[in-house]
Image (cartoon, rainbow, N blue to C red; front, top):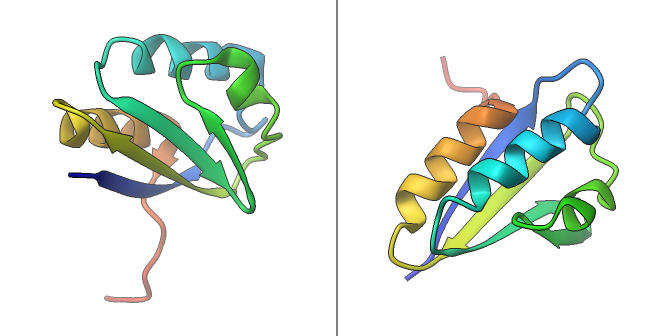
Length: 91
């Protein structure tokens, strides 16, 4: 199975070095394979360089996809760490 979730990056400076390092540290606590996608680019959530190379700015919509035994918990926690859920237009 696969789990995925979308989030909007809330940090005013985007996913720069310090928040990226925190994100990677959190990702490494999960067994699942984790991929972060921004636009057309993807990177391994457990690799600092893999995350930084995406150049994610504040307000960017990103997707986290997980495959593995703890996939649901992983995507929920990592999406929460990045920021807020995207506005779907529903009120």
